[in-house]
Length: 162
Image 1 (cartoon, rainbow, N blue to C red):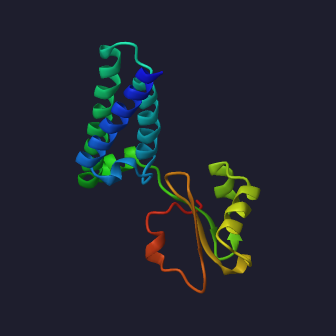
Image 2 (cartoon, helix red, strand yellow):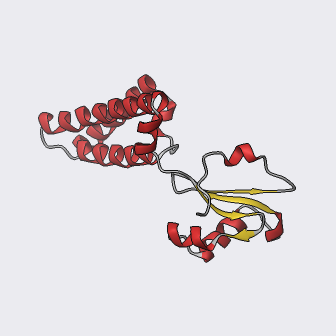
Image 3 (cartoon, one colour):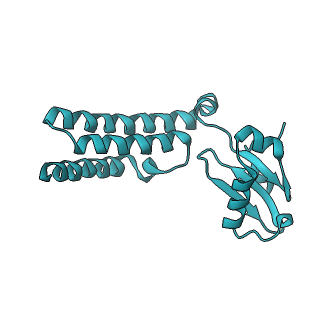
């Protein structure tokens, strides 16, 4: 039991060090790549904390470092190449615009209308006509823009109904 605790603390300290070196964006959910990285990192920490030898402890630590290098590399490549950006990153999808539900977008993204309404309630929407836009973000989060107007710039790069 003490060994597991010690290994878990050591693995978490390693993650903290890697985050300090790589930056806070490391554990963000800005992209689907980041989201997968966070899940994989958690799995590797769990594996490291259950290791029964030093080599089986070192292996997940090396894999964690590899994940951070891969994420750093992907972020750099995304910044310099629109083609790579398109391969790695999904586009956000417009689910609702100016109070109108875009049923085709709901179908394509497999979002149930009841889930959409739950997100609208979460965003304190009390009248559908006040909703300027609802966007399914690349991370799976839903953004609700409501009020009098919405700048078109906020919707740049958002996939619209075809």
